[in-house]
Image 1 (cartoon, helix red, strand yellow):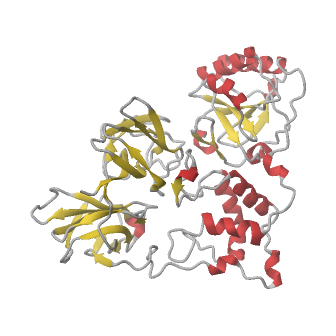
Image 2 (tube, rainbow, N blue to C red):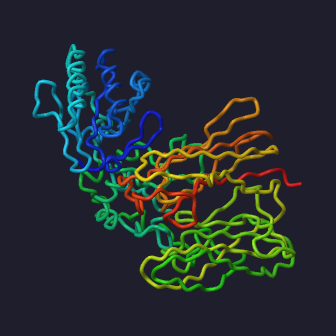
Image 3 (spheres, helix red, strand yellow):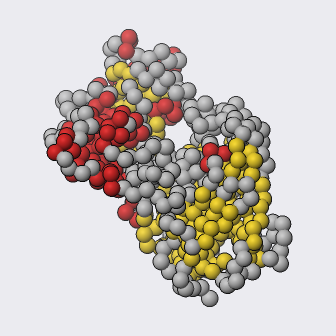
Length: 531
């Protein structure tokens, strides 16, 4: 079995390789036409509850989700949604109503039968007894064969066309990063390049590592989000499985990927109105580099309204993050700093929607906080900040409030350590964007608004947080938040050995500025009327 990643019916992300420190993963295959008896459901729920830390039990729903999964969810059984059907196909599933065992470490899997002791995994005696009782209850509830309906990907009979089906998806979802001057490690310049990367593309789609920043919210509410739909995934994977052909190009037709323009001089937003270059820094090969603070006089003779910004880094490989503040010249040191721009992996540029901007006064200087992380090679870095100015004062002024929890303390080995933080908005505000910030152990984060009347609304859910690609999530339409609204961020950390990014699963981890420590910050872009 290859690695895979799926969301469950509650919006939580599950990846097979994230459970390689468990004794096993048990999957009950669910489908609407295969009714589970109350007794069998009770046995499944009991097993899932009793052995959660050793042998994880979940359900797998091949194909589109339905209301029938609520019976399982109500018993605290996570239901994995295989809405394309690729994972069910990889597991050779032809019937529902069965229980599968997967060894996450070896990736071997098999179907379990109560009458066949050889099929049962080697577990503790109590687990084995309850597992057999669970299997007996499941088998007793089957009155008729539970044949699977054709899976969604199987319902596509035609092999997708590179020109009409595949290339448009690559242009829309991938080319922002995968072009000359972009942040991706390779360029989608033509069909032959994509064909060479096809196995890797298939892998990152099925584990949901790409496209970046996928969410468990309505993607249509967000602007510029490279969220890929189930239909688009089926198109790409079916095309890859059929050989990733580009035969149409043999007719002399132009490859659409050839027309993707590179970024001008490395600037993704175009040439900035003003470029500020900070002092070059020497970064050693090893060791801990403390925060570096740099100041830069702007030389502005009149106030400006910043409509967007972009970072150009000398060596991105060693930049953990950069924050740039505006500071009135009457202050010094770290006094009275106002957020102006921020860089983290995956967050290079920001262009504000029409009508909002940040004020940069002619009496301000720029102050940069730079955090370098050594990577074994001595290097030099010189960072440039490119600013794009609005032509006139905007209707609304932008501010960047945050929720923050500096009291986090994550025990060694903890798979799901929860954290929460909140902030109360004192003025009528408009929410434009959100951006979760954690380090390597960060797993997920949600934003929720609790309104003055007591009602609540989920604003954003990022179920598969990735430190190396931290995203801004810009709403297509700003969300009005009346004065007195509380914005709550709830997150989860994974400090176990199953987290492939964990620097050291044997350490308890608290708040700290270095990458191997942790942070919990919910950044927001909020606008209020420009007085």
